[in-house]
Amino acid sequence: MVIFLDTSALAKLVVEEAESADLAAWLDARPDTPLVTSTLTRVELLRAARRRGRSTVPRAIALLAELALIPLDDPVLDAAVLQDPAELRTLEALHTASAALLGAELDALVTYDERMAVAATAAGIPVMSPGSTSPASTPR
Image (cartoon, rainbow, N blue to C red; front, side, top):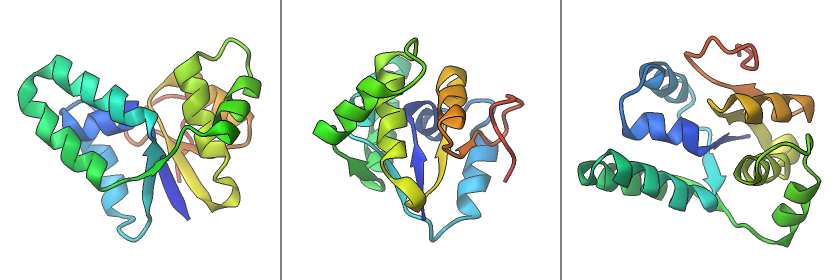
């Protein structure tokens, strides 16, 4: 089993936000579960860290080093094109497709992006948003 974390989740581990403590506790309760993300996250997370101030960049780099990265290869790109709903934004579709291609190996896609959570849930992908009151997040 693996846990896929999108950029909205990983950002909460770099910069303190409302759900940061709940997310950290949820992950700490699963110490042996590998964590993965898309290579897309490298750019998204580091750009977000830079916007918050250069002091957060080393933390983001260290966090990325702990994750397995799913490449943005042709199977991911093809799956993202077909990802429903059609209104799903490009980056959301790429993350959702990356997580979906993990198949039965995926324990949960962790996101705080409501649109992505709804699309992933509709596609049968288990979604978690520890600490969130979002209806798209189902407790596990």
